[in-house]
Amino acid sequence: MLAAPINPSDINMIQGNYGLLPKLPAVGGNEGVGQVVAVGGSVTGVKPGDWVIPANAGLGTWRTEAVFSEEALISVPSDLPLQSAATLSVNPCTAYRMLMDFEQLQPGDCVIQNASNSGVGQAVIQIAAALGLRTVNVVRDRPDLQKLTDRLKSLGAEHVLTEEELRKHEMKNFFKDMPQPRLALNCVGGKSSTELLRHLAPGGTMVTYGGMAKQPVIASVSQLIFKDLKLRGFWLSQWKKDHSPAQFKELILTLCGLIGRGQLTAPACSEVPLQDYHHALEASMQPFVSSKQILTMC
Image (cartoon, rainbow, N blue to C red; front, side, top):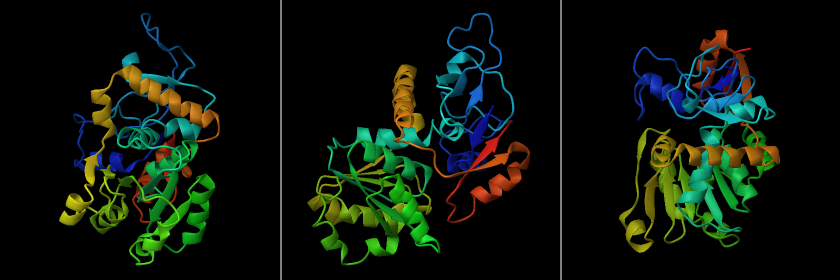
């Protein structure tokens, strides 16, 4: 293994409250990049020196070395930036599929999301910009808000708003100057998701892929009846079950193309040696974290 991030879903899996739990004893980590050092005689898909990422969750990437079957891995170009390769197989895949699979969006259409500073959120901003989509990006208010706003705009965010600003009456005028969003991406739940729904265009869809507030999604009856809004969920592991390994590989190569063209970068990261994993885990669970913890093995 070369490097592996700490994602919220990794923490959830360790806590035992995730949709997919490995048999114990288990190794943590669902994402990362490794370099092949040796292969068995009948292996044809990978060769020594290749960079590889997990094909599925539950592989256990927080370790220095491992033996896997070739079906458990996908080759990626070894000229990718290390942090991009290490964070490729979960968040950018989730972002891309949510943008492509729920609404037939055209260049100029608008997407609204909360948790815009998350790994998925940053990927949504960049992929949407590459597709010509406009984004309204909601974040929690914080001491370094201007710094965060500038960073998200540098990634391609058109608008960055706080949860409090989204609740203001003046937001009615905001959507006079740009189309109402047809797609909302919800990683928070609770009041935040209710606000996203309030601003969706009639017939629009809100996709929930996380619940950081640990509160239910609350949708008003009138919005469902009179605006015909759709509530959907997305889980990458389920998407993989419903699609072939070749389709997932195609998705990975599409994202590698965006990285190669400079249209998709890794989220802000802090590299931490594997032996200091306890510091990295602690840091990853702090509020308002703007940097993803990446365990490095070499």
